[in-house]
Image (cartoon, rainbow, N blue to C red; front, side):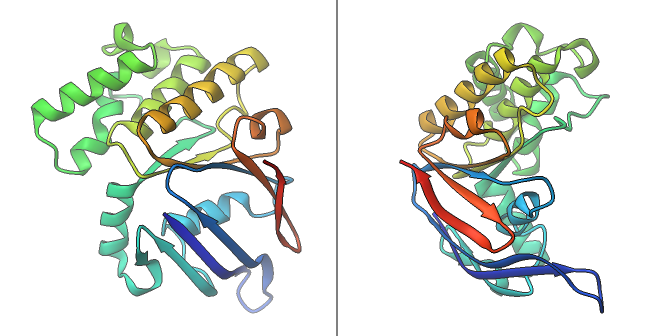
Amino acid sequence: MLTITNLRKSYGGKQQSPVLHDINLRLARGEYIAIMGESGVGKSTLLNLIAGLDVPDSGKVVLDGADLGDLDDTARTQLRRRCVGFVFQAFHLLPHLTIGQNVALPLVLCGASSDQQKQRASEILDAVGLAKLARSYPRQLSGGEMQRAAIARALVHRPQLVLADEPTGNLDSDTARHVLGLLAEQIARNSGSGILVTHSPAAAATAQRTYVLTGSGLQPPVRT
């Protein structure tokens, strides 16, 4: 599903500030892994490179058989819309759209018909327990409900890879456990793969194995 080879990324123009050093990773279809690391170590940068939202200084990212370095912006965007689902810590729900409309948005971008949008959005909202809130707006939901809506949006188009960036950072511990369980369950149900980046050992424990990202690179799994 995903192969990363000797990936490097720095920022800062002439005075380069290295962020990622020789990152290597293989993710098979059906695998769900966690990547732990302190704030600022480059976890979000790594997700952006995997999704083709950023370009590495060197190294390769091969997603679903496509080398992102060989694709132009348009092709990377099309691949990302088709293959990738994002779950963010800050939810990023559009306030002027209902929850149903927010969840259906990836299907709109993928060119699905109106009937397909309604059917799939209804199915995934039911799966995450938000069917009754489809016509509500984000401001009317609790933090846990908004995160469940964000998960539904990330999964509505049945992506092959789900990238979750600190998805429980704004939630209390009980709600976080529920959301993490839901995320793992839905990824498995869709026969997809997933990468969860987090600083929380409890969150990482919901994945199949855990890596640690440090200033010297991505360390081997610490748990199977």
